[in-house]
Image (cartoon, rainbow, N blue to C red; front, side, top):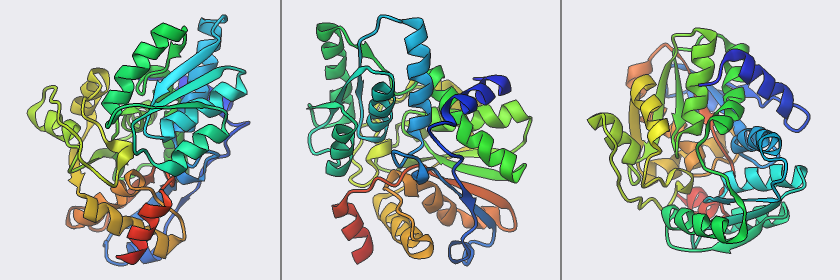
Length: 317
């Protein structure tokens, strides 16, 4: 877990490229919740998601640790790949991104627009990840993981912004893909000495972290979500899982129907786009609102890179 001074240093590093993202209260979302809701808009970064923060810190550390590095490779369903492509281009590095077949076409186009060489392989993220490791060895590329302390240090900056702006909250709901966002929120909370409860949110159709949390041990489970590709995790990261088990107040699940309904409500109430994974925190709070009556709660809108097809589905419901 990064210290407060390390998170502050990361904030200074990324600030030339990313302005502080806003946290707003939206009355139309609060109407039926019975609590004070703040939405942290990580959809307002240059790549439309929180991941860019970690990518910038990771690439800065990599260039100093391996000054001779010529290129990087990463597996992704989109937002991590955009982050790495953005940061690699900024640092003059080749970026190869591996995605599963059928990946969000808008995310694929965005990664290519940032200069990434896109490779499609497999049906799920895990297939793409394993193939990326082969390519890394064959082509002499540095493999960028989806979870790493450098990434956590970067994404912790959004939580630092949130807590510095709002003070101690009763709870923060944050989606969990492989865990960098969750660990970033926990890092900032611990660094500031707060008592805020951190609730992780996963897809009901990708429940590996929820099952692992419930059983207090590593559990793999295939992902079948058709909406929340950003959290389509089959295999938890063991380092991240250790922090999830230790620090989560709870891990809750949201099904695809609830995620799509939340996407629609966020669009209607705020005129902001939330992708499937980005809608999970709000969907989870709404699902469990009886537990948070009269309290101050934040939900992390982790990204807004929904495909046009998914947006049509959300708006037609």
